[in-house]
Structures are given as structure tokens and as C-alpha cells.
Image 1 (cartoon, one colour):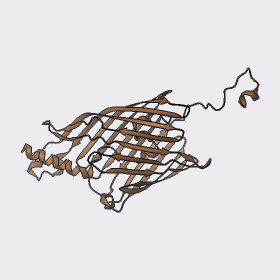
Image 2: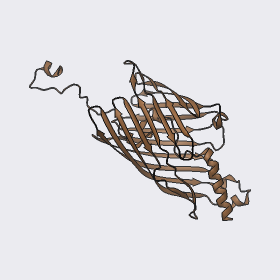
Image 3: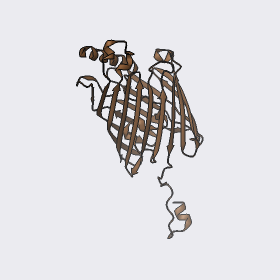
Image 4: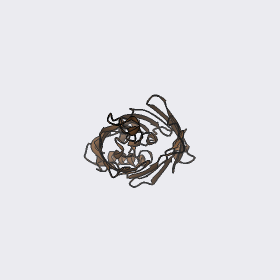
Length: 314
């Protein structure tokens, strides 16, 4: 019986490769919150910020992925940033919940260049509700037990910035922790999913700006995913985001309707795969960003020993 149960569980995990293989939360949040791209971005906005996202994939298909993410990060001193995240992913009988803490160090390479390193560490709990899959009519499933496993998780990232250009590397789940059942049998391992992203913010004038980001991810034993998002911003207050992925198309729009409050909605669709059989994927992100305390250095401070015109025109 144990062998049948284990075989059934492994079968469920193989089925999850089509439904839940990503393991990591999928999100379009990086268009407003780059901290989700790599731990090295922690504190790069030079102001404390917090974001929450709800993502409902493949609407209309039973057991489709459902994701919730909360992140927060900020600069704690001149060259150090900290952050944290809490996430939950549910897909059919599978549920992953995680919490992590991030530390980042930002080293100045020159007047306009910075190299950052980020490290995150946390816990991941994986839960499989096997009994809900057979509705108690299958004698094997009826005698099966749910699987729960708590493991250590960690990630690493590097980031290079030069003026409005940024390029980053991220290696999440680098510990490769193994999810095991109550008998100590390995059900699956957390797969490393290295990714790189490149972006450049360009202002056409004082009103219009674009902030394109290209992201490439290679999950172990899976296809390479490609994403391109091009936020088109008007006065840094409202924006439209065309999104292209090798599995879908999407569009997002958002703004800052009140003070430092941020809101964004995105919708993804496709003519192929599971997404084509559904009503699409919906994602809502809300956030709050504290005003930066960084002091401008292009205007010198007043000096009582110098005439007004001297320090003003320095």
C-alpha cells in the first residue's frame, strides 16, 4: 500500500510539472517593484516601500495557480539595504508558503556606477492535500496521508547600475532543498531557476518616459522563459505597460492616484496552451513608497561666509 501511495504522490507531482512546475511565484509586479527581480535590488529605490500582489491564473480552470505576494524593502544606511517577502502559491492539491529576509550591499564603483550583492534566506513550507484528489472513492487515496514539509530556502543576486541602466542576475532556491513525505522519501527538490534581467529608463521629455525591462529565466528541466515589459509613463503618475512573453501577451496599467500610493492591474491572454482555454490571467498590485530622503548634491548648501551669488552659481 505504501508503494501505491508513493507512486500516486509521484504521479501527482509529475502532473504538477504542467500545473505547478514554476515553484516560484509568477508576477508582473517587477514593472513597479524591481525588488522581486533579485535580492540585490533591496534598497535601490532609496526609500522604504511595500507592495502586495494577488494573481489569479487561467481563470475558469479548476485548480489553476493562485498567488499572493507581499514584499517590503528599503535603504537602512548609505550602502546597505534590507527587505523581506511572504508568498503563497496554490495550485490544485499543492500549496507552497514561504517567508524570507534579504540583505543587500551596494558598492560604489564611481560617480555613476554601483555594483550590488544581495542574499536572501528563509523558510518554505510545502503542503500536498492528497486525500482531496480522490474524493475518498479510490481506496488508495482514501488511505493516503497529506504531505507537509518545511525546508530552508535561500537565494543570491548581483546588480550593476550606471545612471538609468541596470542589469541583474538572480539565483533563487540555490540550496536545492528536498521536499520529503512522512516516511522520509523525497517527493521533489526545489529547483534552481537562474534569471537575468536588463533595463534602461529613458525620458523623452519632462512628461513622457519609458522604462523597458527584459527578463530571461531558465528553470531546471524546463523551457527558457522570456519576458519583455515596456512601461510607458506620463509625468511618473500614470502608465501603460505592454507585456510580451513566449507563452502569452499582456497589458497593464497603473498610476499613483493619491500621494505615494501605487496601484497596477495587468491582464494576460494567449491563443495556445492552458491560457487559451481560460478567461485569461488577472493580477492586481497595490503599494506604498515613502518619499526618498536622499539630498540633492547639485546645489551646494548656503555658506554665510560667501555672498549669495557665489554659492548659488557655484
